[in-house]
Amino acid sequence: MSACAVAPQKPAEPAVAPQPEAEAAVPVVAEAPAPAPEALPNTELTGDLLYRITKAELEFKRGEWQGPYITMLSLAQQTRDPRLARRAAEIALTAKQPEEGVAAIRLWRSLAPDSDEAMQYFLGFAVAADSLDEAEAVFEQRLKNAPPAARPLAMFQMQQYLLRAKDKVAAFKLEERVLLPYDGTLESHLILAQGAFSLNDVARARDEARKALAIKPDSELAILTTAQVAGDIDAAMKVMTDFLQQYPNAREVRAAYARILVDNKQFDEARKQFLTLLKDQPDNIATLYALGVMAMQANDPAEAEKYFSRFVTVLEEHPNDERDPSKALLILSQLAEQRNDLDAAYNWLEKVDGSDEKVYLAARMKMAVLLARKGNVDQGRQLLAELKPTEAVDQAQVFQTDAQLLRDAGDHRAAYVVLENAIKRYPDNPDLLYDFALVAEKLGHVELMEKALRQVMIAAPDNQHAYNALGYSLAERNERLPEAYTLIDKAMQMAPGDPFIMDSMGWVQYRMGNLNEAESFLRRAYTLRGDPEIAVHLGEVLFAKGDVEGAQKLWKEAQAKDPKNDALKSTLARLNQSI
Image 1 (cartoon, rainbow, N blue to C red):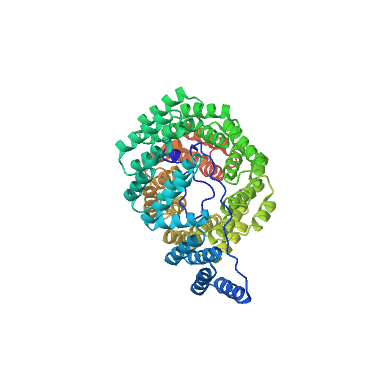
Image 2 (image 1 turned 90 degrees about the vertical axis):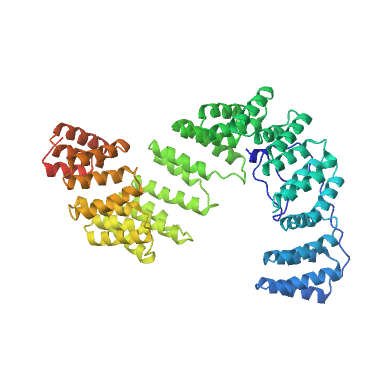
């Protein structure tokens, strides 16, 4: 809510100036006039001057800062050239020397008193250092000199600067004094309302918000501030619904109201609000994305795909540097995969660019998996081989994915070799060790499997999967059952709701002869996750208890879900059963 009520900052502010919390309702104010060109001294660029500047720049490039800083500051004082003072400030700031930076900025401002950029740098540092007396005089002069149409923007810029002040009470008092001559303006009361609210002076905040609304009853920014200081969600929502009844075209208020509804899990009503917004602006990317997310929450993949597809199309037609389609592309790929359209899933991922290395890497690895699922294992592995991630954790993940392709294709020997080589490079990576353990067991190397899992327990003691895997392996081989129980019990304490750990607990109970306990755990696991292997285990327990019909029913369910399930085949063969 507070983000909705903060006015945006003029984009041209420098990096040292405070930034707004978020974009919000934009007050209708004129842009500040373009600054006049700086008046520069008529300084002759002598050979000596050029030599000293060049020498300072080369020294700074080599990592020195003090000599170049002194040179630039000294030359600025001699030549009265503000550009040299600015360069001295940049050198000090790059070297993280704030005191020297402020000294250079002061000189820069004295040499270029009309420079808006110098003033912005000065204000940013003065406020951050709590030199509010110096800043106050500048703020007063800025508002006094600003044309009436541009003055509201200058007020909001002052507010953004003061967000960085350490002494919040002093900053608020400064705002009161500076804004007093402009008591009749909407913006002065909005700023004071938000400032009072940040100090927990709710009564003052509400009073200032009421004054702002009295000046301009249809102001969206004023009503958002009023909602912000209302005291609770119900009161805020009533403020906004009343306003929307009177001003139904207030987009910013409707969007804020819809977001609050989402936060309160009132998804149906929130969806109505977003649809109203979409009707007015059918290509609004924020609304399209929100509706896509809500469709996924409502388990409506077709509707989600419609909105996310439009979101991506709009961004392609109107590129926006501040909006990255990657998340939407990943979601669209997931939705296509869920309906088994692997080609569409692959094509969505292909659109992910390399602007975010992590996202790009995840997309390319998923593309490799999709290629393998379509039968193109070699092509998928080639795609992985072309990836060159910079971080070790990402490099390890590429190895994991490569091994996964081979395991899914049934080539456990090749997967073993890939993972064996990977853990030589990353011996302490728990994920690689875990996958290596599973492949080693598939090949009958149970000692290597156990060694790897125990390494995982050391490297990642909170990894419940390692305890569960070793415990299950022992139970499956009917060996060291008390130890198997202890391992699985520890895993269950870490993740009590995990159906696969419940399955392991049921299986070790069965091996220990505790059929009732085994059935209880396995039924809970199967209720949570209708996995074929859980069904096979539960069926065997029922068979041991004499419920052959119940066992057959479960085995048929497992066969319907996975006709090639190895656990089902081996169990039926061992028990001399057919279905």
